[in-house]
Length: 229
Image 1 (cartoon, rainbow, N blue to C red):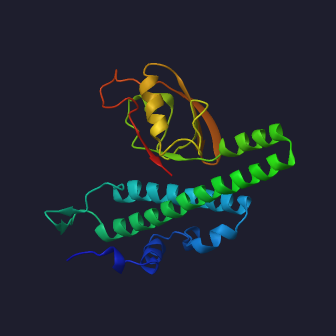
Image 2 (image 1 turned 135 degrees about the vertical axis):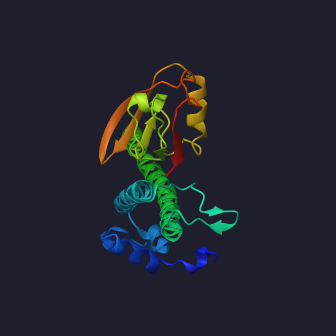
């Protein structure tokens, strides 16, 4: 038996959600062709909705199926019989689609911000425009915290799986993280030093202090994974 992603559609996913007694209306399908016509506030709301859906799906994978996006689903080319391969695959596909929608929205948000700032600059009031730009980009989550290892630097700082990074070291935000490469550079350069991290957790903005170090029993300087949203 083989499983082809092309054979798995949204109807199957909704059937799984119904079998789990989850509200199907929580999980939405988006017509990406209409995103371009939406306002900044409308796009921001959709982004918030998508992030909520992603958090729920990641938690569902972990708590009910003991899996994540990297858990092997086959052994020697055959589907595993000790986990629910079909359901895990369905949830993963939905996550991938939502992530793609989220990336598109983030790009549109950045473009719309730039357009608005340029328009206002042309009208004068540069200081006000710069302040509005700072407030906007400093409030968009762009990285998801995953696989926080007990006893590691991230764990000790208070970071939890599912947290979303908004601001890193007071300067790395949604429009300049460069696919998280700038975060990596800061972590390496500030080994042993404090890094202030602003995160979003359950609609609440929190500030934590992270100290990258290799002086612990695990691997890496953080003891967690950061993945782009």
